[in-house]
Length: 206
Image 1 (tube, helix red, strand yellow):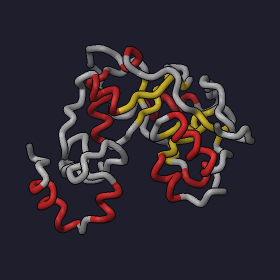
Image 2 (cartoon, rainbow, N blue to C red):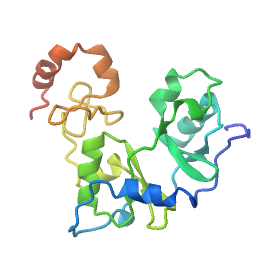
Image 3 (tube, rainbow, N blue to C red):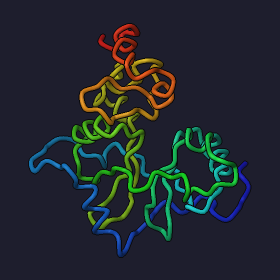
Image 4 (cartoon, one colour):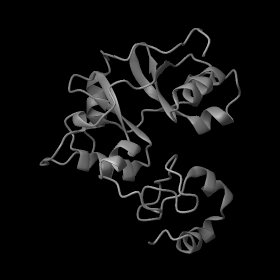
């Protein structure tokens, strides 16, 4: 069991105040004016793992393992601060705080966004999980690529929403538009001039 320390798991409801307009604006980025279909609120997880920004990396690492999840949402003063992933925690110094290693201002969704748009956004950003915001700026949940894949909104195909090399679903790089997807671990191991060759060799093109 994760020991109780400063920065233990927080309440699951965050109600941002001064920053809520900015949160909603970020969530609306690139949102098409006309969309129809099932909304994010139908599929999202309403009980995400939520931790304080002061939590130590080693405590957070044990927490994620105990919960069987790959990432957690990070809060500061009861506002969304960022997202922290298992890979970052494994690489961090044990006594580092999440403030130092969290991915700040992560891409996010509105609960009224369609699942089709959420899937496109997940592919564009490479995000494992997208925080979901209400119109008033409240954090209401998280939507993961696994949920989108299970519901049929992502194909589960190498090079698209799985790593072309190892088939991982986590930490996919989305920095180059139109390029096959690779996880960050494989990108570090494969020379950049051989990525397309590896993609074809390992069946990423279907």
